[in-house]
Length: 422
Figure 1 (cartoon, rainbow, N blue to C red):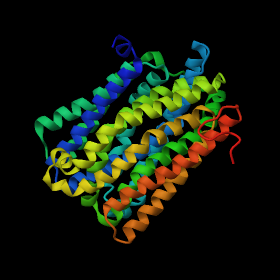
Figure 2: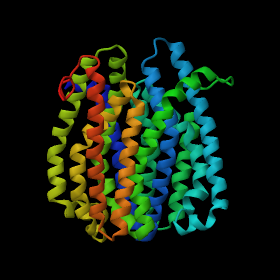
Figure 3: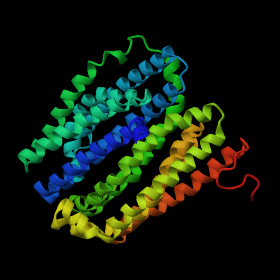
Figure 4: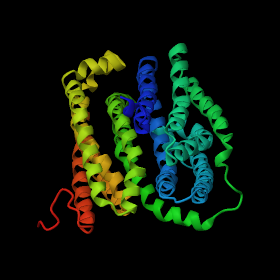
């Protein structure tokens, strides 16, 4: 017990579970207080926000963690951190301007697809979230997991508390609460002067980080498309009400996905260091052990989710969403293979194969978009859309295992397939 309590990875997972729980409860409250149409509009706003945040994250986050965890001294850490700040500022300004201008250039299409909230309000929120994101990313790169948890707590718990107490059914009021909380937290994070950036740009370091992030940004964007394409295409074919129904099982997935993401996040610096030191035997054993234990840990929860799907959905979002229970059953199959898929992505980045990880995720996203389009254009149900996610994940696992085995066989380490096998 003492060993567990001193494990920083344990506290990262506990913190992220709490924060995910706040988000999980927030969605449940909004599903009950908003009309189905307004709730669908909120889901569309959050989905589009997540897509843009993935672009910003892809250009900075992975490269920052990789280079800081591999740095030999404090000077190199400061150099990489400063370059990350500079990239984030330039990119945020560009994205905010692009989104702001687009609402005037494509007003008819934006209105037809229920995107008004996003294009009107998100440019401001994007700027507010810059210092928040950078504080979280720098804390992760330096393995300061309590600080990560604290920042995420301050961005999620106040929102949950306010919508629970006041139970507003007006969507625009909820959006302003969301924005004001992030503005206040952003100001707090700006006072973290330890990571203030210099005015002089270090173009050599920026170029070095872009050399890595040009692949990771493609990976993170494609990963977001894997999740957001379902919502966007359902909205296009069926409207916000069906988006609301489909989103309930997606939020229930996060009960499992968040601890997995937390554990995998904390594994990335360690796997990167083992790979950079050429310790591929330890790299393999660490990878297999973590995937195996996390999958076994999930099994009882998946059994409960499958057999009691109707009760879980009703308890979470109310009787009006009970039609979403078959979708949750399909997603339990996806959760079973999610640990292997998530760790394969981290492992490919750790062994300097970000381009392979990008290719894998782009192929998965392409398969997902085509599959969703085919299902929805042929008027099949939402459970079939969820099954597309299962199929493309299995395909991605196959691709990832193939290239990981090839890479480790070059280091005389057998992964899952013997190096001399046909």
